[in-house]
Image 1 (tube, rainbow, N blue to C red):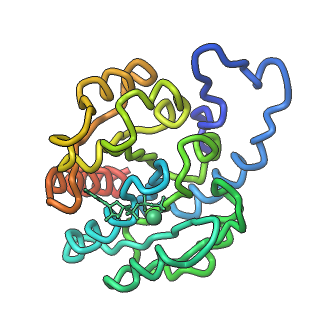
Image 2: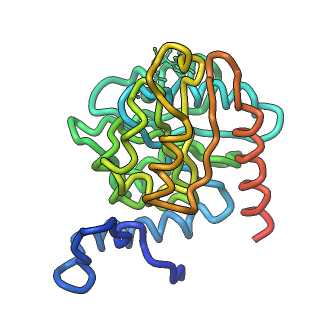
Length: 233
Ligand SMILES: Nc1nc2c(ncn2[C@@H]2O[C@H](COP(=O)(O)OP(=O)(O)OP(=O)(O)O)[C@@H](O)[C@H]2O)c(=O)[nH]1
Ligand SMILES: [Mg+2]
């Protein structure tokens, strides 16, 4: 049994500690997340979050291409409607399953529990969960992942981490995406990193441009290292 505190109980500055003063309404979600963690103990599970359109699916497509000779990957991808993202991934040969949330703004762990029964995980080393595009709601829901990775694209503005703190507080890695657009935008990488670290001093940061291939070696090395560490556990 994992004894570390669930991510749902991580609180941002100024918020109320529900553990002490009221019911933790996410306890059922945390319980299922723990079952997923036990079931997927041999697979590295990464929950990929961001605002809509920050480049999650494009990154998954490219990651599949870069890792295909090293690791078998699968993706569970959630959107409120359509199967467009799963189709995009399948088009490039990735084992992907679409979760349509029917308008819900996040994934809950019971959806993952159902999905892992359907997707073929027999030969999977790394399971990515592409969350619904949203910097708010997904942050409270533990999906049984080993790591949470949040993209922040240069088009979103460098002041976002403190405005949506729980997502950055509960993420192990922040990917500053679309850096190819930096010459055209009033966006400071230093400022966004400082803002994210004011919320979560431990957050790792990588700068990437998926379409220009910048920072992707560091990203795939990060995945390979985490996979190796999990295997050795
Ligand atoms: N300039 C630039 N555009 C990018 C990059 N990566 C993705 N895009 C573009 O950004 C747009 C959104 O990319 P997606 O990969 O669909 O983003 P997403 O986060 O999966 O979107 P949702 O699933 O709807 O939340 C597309 O038009 C991509 O081509 C990048 O590195 N640089
Ligand atoms: Mg997508």
